[in-house]
Image (cartoon, rainbow, N blue to C red; front, side, top):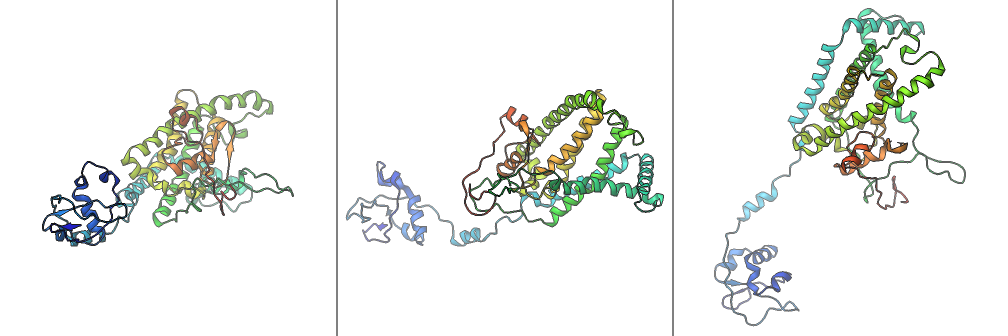
Length: 418
């Protein structure tokens, strides 16, 4: 920078090829001067108290000896105190999904679900079922028959153990894909690789909010399962009948009746439910209000690896809508005359298992892209893809499917050696 009398006030080399190649050096305008002055700790008004010009440098960075002054229009500069205040302002530390509103909504949804479950439960029938369960447990030698007022509590504890407890055991029950056997014939479970070149995808540390969501969602499961049993009872479920009325007594009829029934109704239930959930899930990502208030919490974990924990660590609105939409779908099919006891039982069971297993770190898949844990891991990594809950049919149909990709990585972890 040089003043009007030719004295060098400050020498700076500014790389601005677009300006240098322009028709006139003044194309650089005031903003390059401002940038250079701020970059070199100069207060711009000191340079612009009189006429000031920007002169292009030579190849060696030297200023030319003479040049016609080019007047530059001065612009008010933001006071340094104001700039320091902006720099010192703390960044937003609370993610939007952890603000009071979304948390209160999730807690309210969980509490409302429990209240509605209590309201719509036939407690006379529940007491009879509780007495039946207590008697069966006594018959096999599991403790004395409890008092009637404790039998319903025992029934709910049994349903909790069968839903939450079995879910925790599921990763150990369903085997993961195995690596190729080594020279000694040993193999090990395959882990879903990381999708990033980073050395490690950090695990989200559970907070009090996470634990409250997990607790509320798990407490809602016994009521959900009892309502499922109530629906099946209206279709012919009978605990006193052989095989509870679900399967025929003669083994040959399993091949001639049950298998064709499963082949017809089970795909119907899954394809329909996945279509419904696909659009619900996709809207939760595409509508900002839904993403912030309902779904964003679940995406804190970019690499799901805790199975049940990461499955239940979901906002209660999303969780209960997803679970009760399964029940509503079966109820609707029953009204249409398309209810099937064995197919509905397997649908409800497999849907719960796959929800847990796709949030585990180990590789599991079914043939024909019916299910793959990798697909849901891709969703957690890239977010706006793979919206279907289990398979990839509707993602492929609507152009949102993203196949699993692994970038080369060295070091420890699931990608070691890739």
